[in-house]
Figure (tube, rainbow, N blue to C red):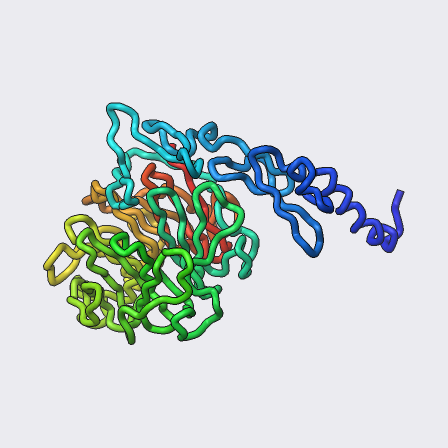
Length: 421
């Protein structure tokens, strides 16, 4: 039986309301009645205008249902809370947040301070080939459950994810186990030069000594610092008139900044505006003492500097005090062979010296062990797309202390997590 088109459209709004009411996700004033049907481990909130209710899991619980039918289960019962096979998952006594502690006989790969440069990932480690969208994936937009062309991210030791949300001119963070909505922690007041504004931020690091975020405010040509303390409404300028792109920080608290215009990386002592050249600075080029559009930068515990030398399709390592670099990934021209890269972007180096790089236009993440002349694909490489095993131009990447991989999927406006196996 075929219904007339007008009749179908007339019934649609009512059908939606009935379905949502049946699912327990939409009812007038229902938060005061049986927690809106959200269950004992969820929080119920009500839209004052529409009376629609929303169920979100409490801290320490994970939604195993859907956005419409929320089912909150103890996070520790789901893959050990993400703590990995050699740790015990438990809950903080006051906040109920997931906390991971090492089992007897095993060494903590991360640290309580969240310094994930201590991560040692086994050389034969594998990751799930299908990623899970933990942030965004709801189209480009400025809502707190959306991203708009995100660039880079950092993952704290407690698995808080903080993202440079480029086109939204903001830095937004997601707390562990809350993948519904983020919190704007810097910018978010439109594009501009005000101290309460950002303009297309490209990268960020956490300064743990001052509990602040240091941000490359690329569109404004400056590096700024925003306190992470509650109530912060504006930042301060650390370095002005700089064509920054990537940032890193070493154990001594020195800041490393990659500069596109000068094809260089400089090290800065916080509070000083003149840096020390540590890589490049000899003009654009492909020589070992040159860089061409240095994007992301990583500094190991020995203060050796790794750079995504983007136009040269290679990753360079500059040992401390060196006047030229060493090719540690790519450098064989642009292409998709295992010896090649095609616009390398996000960068991470573990404590064994293994290089992980976001190979942007090849839509894959590659691993290059120390001294290897070719890499291996660890996730992606399945063409452009929005599938769970695909990317559409990947930019930043990071690991949490357990070895789980996080990737910024730029044109899909999302962050994907790939669990270590």
